[in-house]
Length: 413
Image (cartoon, rainbow, N blue to C red):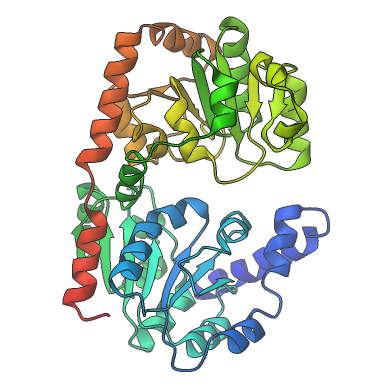
């Protein structure tokens, strides 16, 4: 099985290198890893012993962010190293103020893992949620370096719990401690004799709970909205935008703010064609006050605003539910907003919980969506749903403190 794993890693890299001239993300993935060891050797002094945080992408970064912030607050002298697998994480957070070093993670080969860990000599390592690399984990165990998995979550259908999953179970055995999101995950780990795990919850709740205490002051957004009701669509894809188009046609007096997941020129142009009465945030200085107020749709074609935009929403729509899975619902929930999303949400515990609480509203067809939006025109229903969402976030804070207590008790710092 290890041979198959290694071949899979090799083939994945070959394919990305082949398509990189024609695919923007593949190109970033490839070029970002060129000469990465030279960069590390030139950047990190010997004996620096940073705390290494690894994230698959941007969503996982948000889960680890609160832990980084607390470590830096209590131990400002500690150095923080971040690695990312995906360009969508690295390119957005490569200048994160609390990180001393930020790199792409080299491919998971035995040689790369040995070299990387030898170069950085981490004090301890934190991986997030569900990314498990055989050679990195194995080398950390051999080197006696503690490895923590935070906000980890497991499902019955994962390979770890199949009869043929022995190789992958070995990867889990290299983890020093698992901080688990829910009781079912703890049960699944116990079923394969992994007992070094404890229920902590999801660190994102700590992060987003803090957001709700801040009141954004986006003057342009306020001018665009005026006194009208507004739907904010976050991390949307083309299919999501088609559904939002249908809502905008039915509710022409509403305003719509779209923050698409991809902000490349082609996608922004396609949204502009879909919504003729739209303006772009990056070009806001080109519009008169009258044009801003007259527009029905504001397209957010820049990064970093989405979490603040939910503050202004009456309804929110989270994208991804017609693709690989919905994006972050908690940033909308923390502001007490009802949340609409597509059918692919079952892998996200918080989305399941929000649906059960009557704060999240999944749909598969336009007719279902319109019925939900119509029902939520009732302000009292909207308030009940929003209050349930906000309460849900506040009640689940504390994972970061649990993780920090372990780090300190085990003398990792």
